Length: 279
Length: 359
Image 1 (cartoon, each protein chain N blue to C red):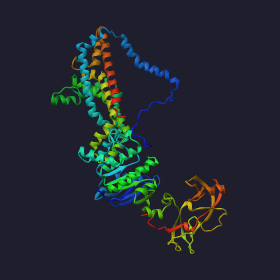
Image 2 (cartoon, chains in turn green, cyan; image 1 turned 180 degrees about the horizontal axis):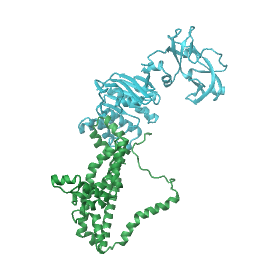
Image 3 (tube, helix red, strand yellow; image 1 turned 120 degrees about the horizontal axis):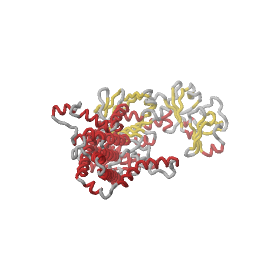
Image 4 (cartoon, rainbow over the protein chains, first blue to last red; image 1 turned 135 degrees about the horizontal axis):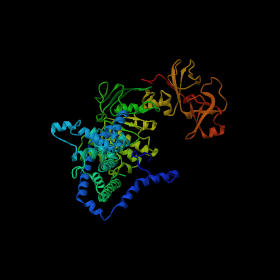
């Protein structure tokens, strides 16, 4: 029949769609740039010391803290990021352009700068932090909460951009049909809008979580490096690396652990996509 | 529940102006035809609430949907919409798609599902309840979309070229199905189409839109017998020529041609429309003398195959002639040939031009 499906599908490239041979070399160089450092890490690792390094109390504590704060930051990003993405996707071109620029700012800004900015906003003498400190006696910097805020700050753009793109691709035609059937805005959001962007939502969430796990700069400045409180995996690696020469092996082992965690996340996402998605 | 429609819609979009009044009694079906860009879809979108008219008032039953102070949201209009793309929700099964409108109106889950199953049965899709739209054929998808639109019990149903994306056979089956269910539910319906078959099968009234205005309106048989515009005439497969009746009863067309025809309105001085089918025209061997009635000459400007032969149009003339294959092959007619055409007076029907052409 002649009706085309409205949902775009990924297509296999046709065999004839070859790229110019000249471009294969730079492509390979790019791939090497991305993968060879990991190989370096694997070869440099002192495999006998890896098990003890990654099961040491410091490592376990850092990993646990990373996973907990990363999960908390991802949850926060989902709660505020999905509505923000919807707002951007459904605004007029000028407003959405402005909102998108503001959203991507942390993406192009060095995380260190973000850390300093957070410190001056939420620090004890900061714009908002001073008020919180005086009124409620709350101090955020150098706490686990600060870690979560720093991670949310750097990870949120990944979720918003990903979900916003999915919303734009899905368009508003199904929503218009749902409205003509009498559905309220809330019902349309729950039953139509969200299910249609699930793939974008999942990949956005994974990117967001991965970015939160790897967050270093903003955390270091805003939350510090207190073992068990704010010393996440990246900070633990940095600390081990900057310690005495023996620490470098621990740093490598911890780095490998973080790489493995990232790979596991990616594999989980892939398998979920192939199993969970409607054809 | 059925309700009538009273709509005065004015939309301004740059140079394009739409000014249309529609009144429909409860349960009637109006076909809106017109060339591209005539404002058909704009009219539907205004009634559906997708765009806000600049002026006017839209009432369904005794509810005002739109006027200077009121603009009822799409979700509260109870106006169903079905286009050429079925737009089934891709993540929901056929049954879930059909039950969506019921759930939106607060019907309980179990009841919504049984109503939806019943509707799927009515459109001939029992057994496909759990299928996702992607695994249904185009015709099946459009059937689900019809069931979904009707199961929501709209007061008014708007169809925007619902068969345009289907192949001929499927379109015919879906059209018959629609006709059956529009009659059964008695829902007031507007169907926008460019296919006169849709109007014939589905509608009891027809409106022709041209440049944002109603060019012709009325019952289908009336329009087919006495079309007021060239567009209507070509839709129903007739040639239309306008002219004024001379003292001797002959009609002088606006382009100077002379016609004789039949009809009560052939009174001297009257402005009349003349219609005759393309198949009534015959190829003549001798060229027409100036002023001879029902006989003229010209060069062939366009030729295309038709079901029984060839359709021909002469340069500078809107009249279409449909000639049997044998006639034009024998005469050696090609593009650019000079030919003469004639039509019998008994095939030319005259009627007063002033009939409700515009409102």
